[in-house]
Length: 288
Ligand SMILES: [Zn+2]
Image (cartoon, rainbow, N blue to C red; front, side, top):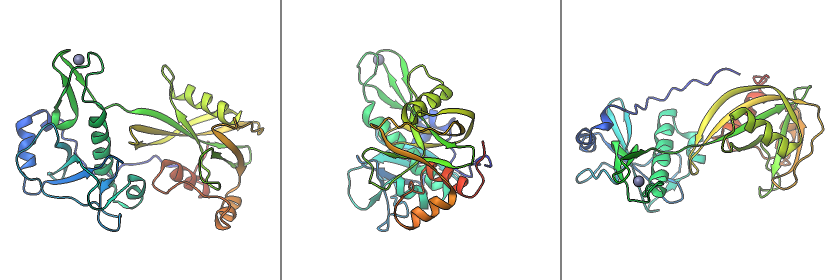
C-alpha cells in the first residue's frame, strides 16, 4: 500500500492566528467564508448534502465565537457553532464527496467547534477560559495556562491470515449485515502497538505479527484520530468477545464481492479509513 499523500491546500496560518488583530482583518477579508457546525456535528451544506454551504462574515470579529480554520490561496475560512437551520450534512457523507481541501476545512471546523462546546471551563481550576489564537487555544487567566484541542487516538487494524484473507467483524448494535475491520481506543499509558495487540486479543482472541502502520484519519465525532495498521494473524482460531464483536471471519476478496453483491455483507462508508484500507486489500495493494 502506497503512503498516503495529502493534497490539502489548507494553510493553518500558525503565525497569523497568534495576532488577534490579524485574525480580525481576515474576518473582514472580502473573500472570507464562514461555515456552520451544528450540535450534531453536521456542517452547513447545499440541498444535496454533497457540497459546503458558506456565508460571508457580517459585523465585527468576535474571538469567542468566530474560529479561524485557516486560509486557502490566502482566502480565509471561519467556523462557527450554529443551530440546525438550513441544510446540513455529516462529514461521514461529505468526506466521501468533497475535494480534499474542502474536506480538510470541514473536518477542522467540526473538530474546533466540538472542542469549544465542551471546553469553556479550565479542567484544572474550573475557571471560565477565553478563546485565543483564532480559536486554536483557550487561556485560563486564573492558572495562566493554555488549553489546546484534544484528540483521542484510536487504532484500526486490517488482519490478514496466511492466505491473505481479511478479518471482518460485526459490532453489536450495527445493522445485521454491516462489517468492518476491528478498532478500539488507546487507553491511558498505552503505546499504539500495545493498544493494537490488546484490542485485537480482546475482540477476536487473535495474536498478531508483522504489525505495520499504514495511515491515519481525523474523525472528530467528537474528537478521535484513527490510526490504521495492517498485521498478520498468528493462527486462525477466532474467539470473539461476544459483547462488543458478535461475530467475525476471514474472507477472500471474491467472497466479499459476492456477499456485498447479494446484500449479505455491508462494508464501511466510503469516507472512512476502514473503507480505504479494505479497498486497498480488495485491489491487492495491502501487504503485511
Ligand atoms: Zn485554570
